[in-house]
Image (cartoon, rainbow, N blue to C red; front, side):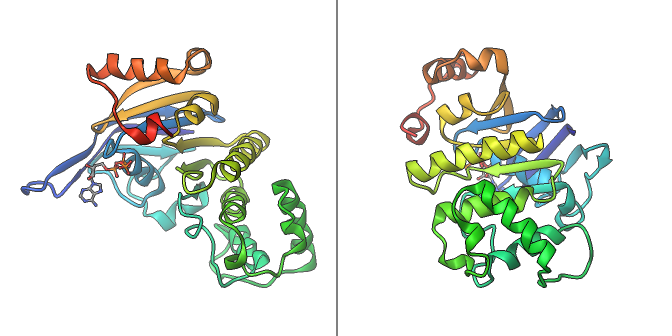
Length: 264
Ligand SMILES: Nc1ncnc2c1ncn2[C@@H]1O[C@H](COP(=O)(O)OP(=O)(O)OP(=O)(O)O)[C@@H](O)[C@H]1O
């Protein structure tokens, strides 16, 4: 479903500020794979997500999604293939528009060039059905402005909007990190449910080791622009966070000291 071959990204190449954000990495995700991604500050996680979404184009290598070569396609040209939820609950939705207007935009994604905020009775019924899945009572608040929702409700809505048209790849960018533990747990459950129901191929960046171990069927660890660990389901299932820290130390020969992971 997703194949990345020798894709690399260097910022400020040839200057004193040159930074190799991603070395020439290879990654293949089969349809339905749910891969969690961890790594310390500056490891290359956002760069990887941005190369897949088209927010950044690679300097080298090739990226294909569902058999289509998207390597040189800009973000809007591959938007219909990708759903994305960001850390900031404000990022995925339009606050001054109603819930149903936001959903109408998500529904129209990749379908037509014209943006129609109009909501027919049939669409409204579809939106109600989908919103019920979130279990937040939003199906009764279709005309409420999204800016009035809580952070957790906005993330739930963002998740629904990102997956409404069953994207080929779902990118989750620390999407529970800004929420309190109770709301984060709700979004985790909802993520599992939506990904499973729609059999979505998913890449989820998290700084929470428990989440990384207990969600999905594969775990990647990035370090200095490389994938240094690629742990399959069978092995991941039996690991504790302590085992994961040890695996990192073994792979790198140095301790993993970032508090947000260890305490996270
Ligand atoms: N636009 C940019 N210009 C220059 N350097 C950049 C740019 N974006 C990222 N970098 C650098 O590339 C490296 C990888 O950054 P990236 O944001 O992918 O890491 P990350 O794993 O997402 O880290 P974090 O968890 O801290 O967000 C870092 O050293 C970062 O400073």
